[in-house]
View 1: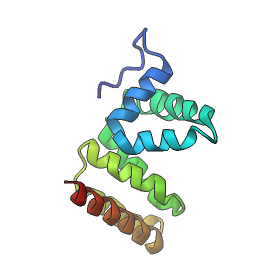
View 2: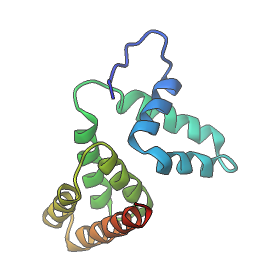
View 3: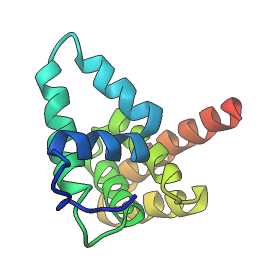
View 4: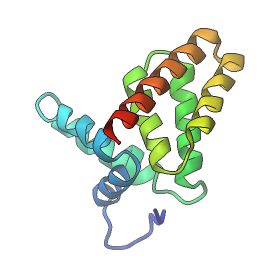
Length: 134
């Protein structure tokens, strides 16, 4: 993805929709759809801020941004659904399964073994689902 936030005809929402589609694919669209009944405005916030503003910034490529996101979500220890979405996103932007596994193992040092284990189990579920879909 070309990360150009300065495009004059591109709104935050438009940039965010493009970024979400490229990064998260179907998993991202499921998150947005799940918000439709309860908080449709929040879906706009998701498009605009994280994807339209942050992910679309220059300075880091999408691969690097997903490394940081996977590590942060795993370290939190309470965001398994979002972690799974971003493990998918990591695969979508070029991370290998081995790299994702190493990111999650690294979390044992800084976030503890439970966070690393939970992250590895989440990754295993994502990898297995991908294998079934293939």
